[in-house]
Image 1 (cartoon, rainbow, N blue to C red):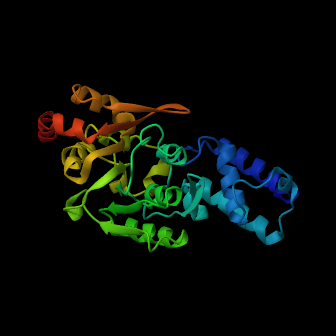
Image 2 (cartoon, rainbow, N blue to C red):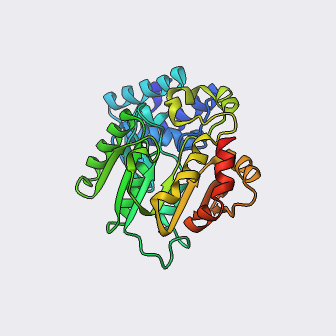
Length: 304
């Protein structure tokens, strides 16, 4: 009986049990039922994810109980990601508004931002940075917050996503330090050059998308799919990035499970595949000079 539930911990345990029993898929910021239940319960009572454990014994009011239980049932019935239900996701230790206008923030690039992009940017002077295919704006905004001296642009082809990103810029009070540009990759950024370009573009293959769990159907398809091999967008970025990087500029791109396809397609390109705390995650770093040196091979691959 849910009437026996009283504390925050009670509701987290109950929600996790219900999620597991319902066979939900976890892949939007969380990889297990307990973390997802914690997100749902704490967000619904307007508490942060780093709440001290002692507060776990705090009792919910009748209205709070009803609200949490309604969200638990909605998560099970609709398969909507918790971030959309709560209207909030956390990325690089920061809160972001999250809804169906953009993918739920969840890139491993958060770890790079929190670590100062070390060792990749060690000894480099960064003045301008770009977050390409920004979605909710999470990567670019986190870069700007963690590096207040940088001038950061964010860009996306989706007007809806950029509207959400601008709300997140306002949330973090970065309106005077950031620029949001509607652009089909680099098309709206002609003449702009950056010391660092970071991108988490669409990279899901058509076959992979068809097999995704129901949770992913709530996200904009535009932000997920990239053709038969998942490389349609990544190859365009590789092709045009040299024109938008400074001479010593660095490109960092997430391609996820399409890593193998990209490495096989361009074996001569010296991609540096970044190791994260949990292991490789399909994110590469590449110097501008390497992009220039292998431009012909990249152009041929993109043409194919």
